[in-house]
Each structure stands twice: as structure tokens, then as C-alpha cells.
Image: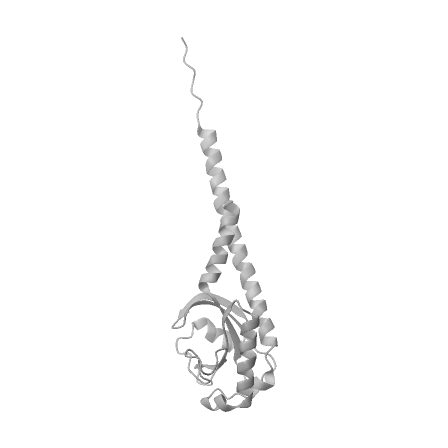
Length: 193
């Protein structure tokens, strides 16, 4: 009695490997594409916010504690609070300036003056990421991160402010890094499903 010859399973195994490789490639592409879209959207949002900031109020700021009592500073504080409410996905909104000595200072942030985590005008940003120094000095738009400082982990979009008579002044908005990662993880699951 003749025994039936076993057919090799190589074609099935090869098909499985090809399918797995295609899935990995598709997942990688989906995550990269989602990250690109998020960066574009985030930079567009920073541009929109920067255009909504009255340059005449920014021009009145000296970048010192003296700003804390200026009417322009107080109006900008209210304006920033409204922008933060409008753009709820932003964890923070603030203006930075590079001083002549190269130090980066905060001009204003979105926190109420009485908030425990408010950053007073003129405060040094001593743990500023190097990307911020580059963005300020080159007056370049950028999205960078995840970054970490004493305030936590975040993705930042930076755009120079137009129509200010102060050089090296940029708006920075931050998005919570965890929210960013969740969006990328969601993008990774789509090809798998």
C-alpha cells in the first residue's frame, strides 16, 4: 500500500510571512502618516493662535516683572485664557523671547495671575529645549517633541509672531505628549484591524 506524500507547507508559511511583513509595513506607514498630519495640524493651530494675538499689546511688553501691572499685559492674559478655552487640546500657550544675552524668557503664559503654576513675565526658561533656542534665533516655525521639562512631557509647536517690533519673539503652544502618543497608537491599530 502506497503512502500519500505529504505536501510541503512552505507556500503557506511563505504567504504568512509576506502577510505579516505587509502588516508591519502598513502599520509603520500609518503611524508616520498620522504623525505628519498631527504635526501639520498642530503647526496650523499655532499659526492661527499667533495671528489672533494683537501685536500692539505684545510690543508694549518689556519682558520684565514691570509688565505684571501693565494694562497690555493684563489684556493679553485675558486673551490667552480665551484662546486656551477655544483650543482645548492645548496644554499651554505662552510667548517666549530671546534676550540679547541669549537667555530665553517668558513674556506671558495662559495661566491666571493667581494660579500656583503661573510663570511671571521675565522669568528665565533655564531648561528650555535647544529646539526653542533655534526656533527663536532663526524665527522658524517648528514642531518638536516629545520634550520634557519641569512642567512635564509635551509636544510643542512654535511660530514667530508677525508684526512685532521685538526680535526673536515666538508663540509656543504645547500638547500633552500622552494625548499625542494615544493618537499614534490609534493609527497603528487601523491597519491591524
